[in-house]
Length: 326
Ligand SMILES: C[S@@+](CC[C@H](N)C(=O)[O-])C[C@H]1O[C@@H](n2cnc3c(N)ncnc32)[C@H](O)[C@@H]1O
Image (cartoon, rainbow, N blue to C red):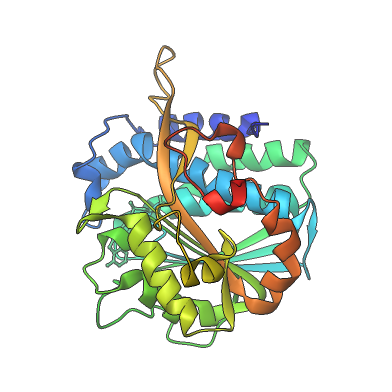
């Protein structure tokens, strides 16, 4: 069964693109480095790549929270989210929508970091836009448990580098840590491992961390393979954390890794010109791993082993964990 996304998501994207004069002009080379984008670039990104990030993160989080955690998740009222490389908030807003749909939450505390000041300005404006307010209203009509949640947002300019990888420099804790499509842009050695070493200790007891990235080839391997290799290196020396999705990587790593570390999720109806009514709807591909502390992994393991991540749409381009489907 395919998950149908609620209508308000597309309505939000179309209104937002209109409100901010976004436009569709895909170019896979142009989008490889986004850190110096200025206004015109950001409007192009908004009309072209922002919707993909939003819907990909939405699909991943919605599958995970819906199938593994169950619906209407209880919280202590507050939920703390950290997004490293949040940009204009494509991934963050996809995640936020899932949180408001599924979590009985009164307050969301969001901290976002990015090296591009102009992107952060757009993000702030998006959270004050008519499109955003309409989406919040739609969530209320759907009686989403978090629809009325207050939002406390702190966005800060920081550049992640080999020398300064930890943008937090404190002991703060988060219920959800996200990074979406930023790590591939960094010129930092073993960046996936460093991300896990730096940010997983900031997870709260029941916190989870989404590492999402594009999946093209870099240095002879697909990005998902770099992510897998560095995740397994990390897990081998950190028993206190586990890979929640796909589960069982530690076990596979000791034997025959049938996936060769290649993980790719195909998201449908993400990639098209939303201002052209005749546009053909295309798919987009990302890689993703989700991490948590070991006790939460142990608790969720039975559900995880039955988890069929978007498996209904599995085509030859859709490769999640072969072990899950056998
Ligand atoms: C492709 S965009 C993704 C934005 C957002 N996370 C999303 O999913 O839509 C990559 C983001 O990473 C940011 N970025 C690139 N290099 C960075 C660095 N060294 N430190 C902090 N942010 C960086 C860019 O400014 C940009 O906003």
